[in-house]
Image 1 (tube, rainbow, N blue to C red):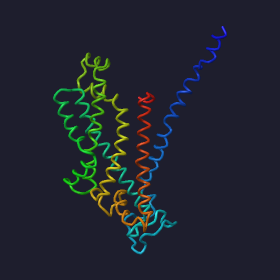
Image 2: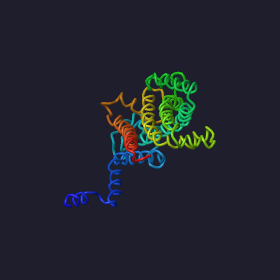
Image 3: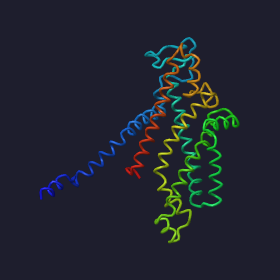
Length: 294
């Protein structure tokens, strides 16, 4: 009897189970919450750049070149006397805008390709996936550089190159999810009652593919920020004097000893932006794999 009583006293009450699940959710997702908070602040600053920037990012003052950080210029000035804080804010806006465009357009192309390849199969699947394999055969940065070399220098062409590089990730992920779901009972039931293939793909399979796709979108956003910065650093992306974190780092490397703050602040902004996106994606991936989010 004593053993039975002890066993009952050690069992958690039904009221404590939701609390433990709630605590488990917050304990496992706090890095993502911090990453989301930092990312939200950066996005808010970039969206409101015209309000929070202390100066015009293109306004030159040659007599104030390479000023150290001060109350008037918290991040200092560059070789043309332009306010670095303003240029970093507008450069972050450029990175956020390009990353958002890349994720939306690459997803709009890659998701239908993966859905069709996984559901239809056969020759269609083989053709789509071989095209994806061709893109994946090249390192992302080399392929992006090659595409910009063909398309020409500029922010739009750089964005197009990053979009092409990003499509395979969405296509492969959605294809794998579609293959996993298309033979399950709810899809077979929809097919049995006469639902069309398009309706089954859009109304039954696609919603179940969205949680991992959202995580992939966050991963691709971080990669897009880095690729855009790399292209601008190489002089193939955003064309000066338009501000970009990549082209600011390129200019700063020539004056590292004379004005170390020149490269420091754009580098910190780029690091925070990529790190917050990656932490958010990593947290979402862990929650997804443990079944906390579906």
